[in-house]
View 1 (cartoon, rainbow, N blue to C red):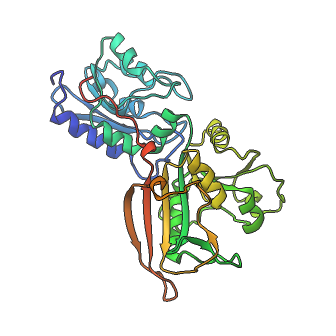
View 2 (cartoon, rainbow, N blue to C red; view 1 turned 60 degrees about the horizontal axis):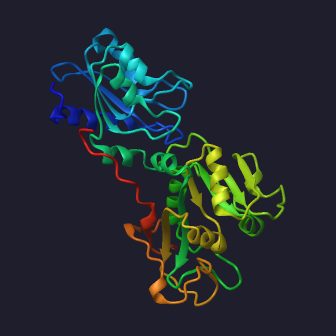
View 3 (cartoon, rainbow, N blue to C red; view 1 turned 90 degrees about the horizontal axis):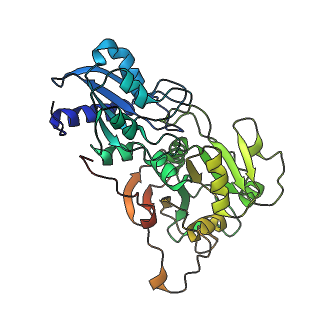
Amino acid sequence: MSGTVGDIERTAMRRALVLAASPGVPLGPNPRVGCVLLDAEGHSIAEGFHRGAGSPHAEVDALTRAGAAARGATAVVTLEPCNHTGRTGPCAQALIDAGVRRVVIAQRDTNPVAVGGAGTLRAAGVEVETGVLVDEARQLNRVWTFAVEHARPFVTWKFATTLDGRSAAVDGTSRWVSSAAARLDTHRLRALCDTMLVGTNTVAVDDPHLTVRDDTDVPIARQPLRAVMGERDLDPGRRIFDAAGESVHLRTRDPEAALKDLFSRDRQHVFLEGGPTLAAAFLQAGLVDEAVVYVAPMLLGAGRPAIGDLGVRTIADALHLPVTDVTVLEPLNDRDDLNVRLTMSRPSSVDPVETTEGN
């Protein structure tokens, strides 16, 4: 095989991406990684993938399966081999020790703890290519990549609204603005996150449980952290503090401080379900990276707005959220309306462009 990236290695990288996304692999806190070892003719020798924190990394998994056949091989891996000793040893050194001749990498690792694997490999005389199917690799670990590069969790803001932008009626009733199908879909999205976040007022007034139901189609290794932010003292008997999952009270009203605290706890994906005031604070701070809204075909005319004051006084200053997906949620029963789910992003949350192939 030559020193340029060819179809065989790209095909192997696609296979490595599939391996990285194997069912049951946790979404965090570690990245999902796959590895394929090729012989000199481009035939697959062995495959491996990372199964979660504390388990062998993808490269070591593949090397173990290959044994002596790994000498002189090409390792095709979705993320730059790590360069540090944690629960396991550095993968860059494992590849060197195994006698691997060439390493083809999709995404560079910018985690300051693990960075430098490509340099270590090159210093040992191993041929290294990076940037192969990098966009696909970044998408595979979208949240982990964002958290590492921004030193804070990715924030998904979710809310339900009527057609006229209300989240509750004048008397405060809000069950149910969204349909049963929308609520089930919300639990599916909760299961993809590691943290639920609300404000103290939501806990005091609504007493939410903030757990994930077990009838979603997403495996739940453990319940997300239930975080509440705000300086108000709360009744310890509120459901958010029960034994169904871990919880924390962040004594701050500052969204940036709250995210910094959560990041220090190794949290990477926050699901923001607070009220209109908290949502407005995150939006004004530029800390909403994705918005998911469930729109119900009903009108209230008055009541609590879905979002608080953003300081917008003229239409030219309106906040525009690019729509990335529109999904129709069919009713699960005869009592419910059809709901529409809109998924949107902020322009400021676009990931930085990484170096292309051949670097």
